[in-house]
Image (spheres, rainbow, N blue to C red):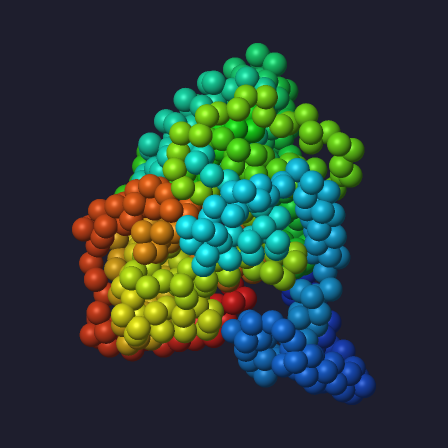
Length: 510
């Protein structure tokens, strides 16, 4: 017990947390001292807060994001204004924004829309073509036709497919993941990747500096590079107060040779394939696409891999040598989203699908923290007679996020939206399908972090059998769910309802 306590106290994670707390304490004490002993400093802070309140109220930010800051300024006037300035003027975030915008501009020439495909989609569904054109113009990702695709309703099935495809790699294997943790899944993948690297295959691994950095031993990836796997960290976590730490790479991408790609909710850790029981049965989902559409995922990976570099034309060499025959049906459009351009594509896709629905909208998400526009869209659709259903976890991974979700339940249920919870455990799938015409699978949660702070990715399917496969998975999952009622919301203990209401006020900042 004593040794375990020593390990906890003196490990890297504890040290990082301690350093952050020291910085926060120093800032608070400094501000308190100056404001109490120098009236001029106090007056300047209050004046700054007044200017910031005016700025926030007149900004184009989502009102749900504005309100928490205004409340904090009211409750903690000495510190909140300075914290807001820190968040909004952080050099790290500005660097990400500048570099990513440059990389997107440089790679645009590698993602050219085939106008014949777009015209075919317009003839079949003008409304869906409008969404596709929005993603082309504001996300720089084209729509493809008849690429082969496969849907995985659980992580175990996707894991087997990942291993199968890695073994067939001939030129390169690119992996980009938010979470990588030791265990059976990573051990088996690592052995395959080392094997392919030793065969001369270009193997690269991009991992997030927060989601993965705290999972693995120090210098683990430096040692892994000696096995032939190139490793890079995105936005390495450092124990310094900086808002750029909010901008995480939440994407999950595996690309093989530029013509096969995986994405979805599945990270590389044993709970995702139910080899480790953390929150009951782990219900996840993912997709494989094979053909031209995989090239879009290749570019997504290379944009972040070369984030701080200038394109010298070398991306051309990653273009697929092999052309796969069109064995699928319908249309597929991979896309990514970033916190750097203010476009919020992931959220806008969900919003458009809900607005355009005429028969049903089915959503599966681990977290339910929608903004006001999404709430209004779901309620309006339900009141118009659209069958709007949401599947959530019954066993949450984060109690406070689950508590916030319950604060939305009562409002959505009153608006005729139906909510279900997955009794066997935790839902981590991020999926939405509508009217047997359109569906999305990817990494995008229905919360503020995914919509506004993280790098994300997904794929839209138009007029494809993949839509029916996702719908079938939703209906099968529904059989293992309990429906939440308005009465259940009213019967929640008052302390729990109060905690949910308070947490909801600050949900956009969590």
